[in-house]
Amino acid sequence: MDLKQLSYFVSVVDHMSFSKAAEKLHISQPSLSNAIKNLERDLGFQIIERNTRNSRLTEAGEVLYGRAIHLLSEMAIVKKEMEEVKLIGKGELQIGMIESVKYWIPKVISLYNKKFPEMHIRLMEVLSGDDVMNSLRKYETHAIITNQQIKEVDIETVPLYKEKLVLVLHENHPMATRESIMLKELEQEPFIISTEGFQTREDILRAFELEDTVPTIKYEIERFETALSLVGENLGIALIPENYLQGPYNLTIVSKIIDSRALERTVYLTYMKNRYVSPAIQAFIMEVEGFFEYKVSD
Image (cartoon, rainbow, N blue to C red; front, side):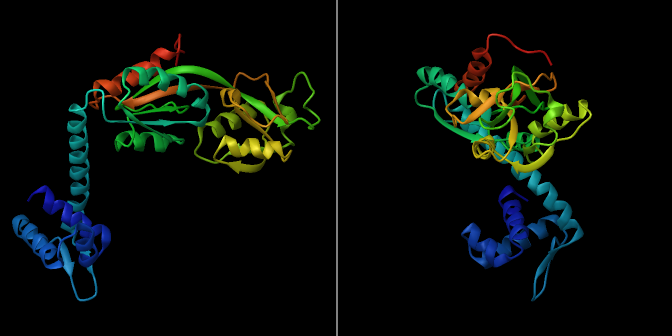
């Protein structure tokens, strides 16, 4: 039994078809069938039951499939790490991030580019907590800047800074000229909030809960950009990270700080603890950590 045989077996299971798997693997169907038969001979038992209509896994095949997926995933990780060992100042840096870091991440990249001008940098949004963990563990990203406090033994979570969640509303809104606004006063307003699974949503709902009230949720969104567009049309109000407002936005939008300690969040840098990364990639992680003059406590 070897890794090629296992990869062929996984492909057959994933496609539920020998012909489709053979096409995907760029080999002939007879060659694929022989490879699976040889694997069954080596194992000493049948792993796929074949008939004229379809194929299905035997009980032993189901066990092998789970193990094969794990082994192939581990080998892909080893291969990627070995490729990165060879890269000194070159290669690709994959960074996940939340929307509100857009005001400072270009500054960090500018400093980093002076030291590693040949690195190709890929930036992508990674928002929910599950997405953060999956992306890191699948080696899709080297590091992720997130507002999720990840508490996993294999993931390092470094607090970078705190930021407030501020109220945004249209300049024509009756509260736009108010000096101070209490959270409880917003309970009847058409509220714009992140969809389920986002930490910002949980933080906002927790803040309302502490005031013994709930918001009137009218719109659910995935991006703060969408929230600002809705506010710009005076369709509702929203609470968004203060740093998201660092850049240009609709001048008809007014921001207000709500007096609530609960409307504050921490931004973290996360990465795999035991993953090998090249010196160039490690340098970026250190650049991010060093960009902030102080660290916040847990």
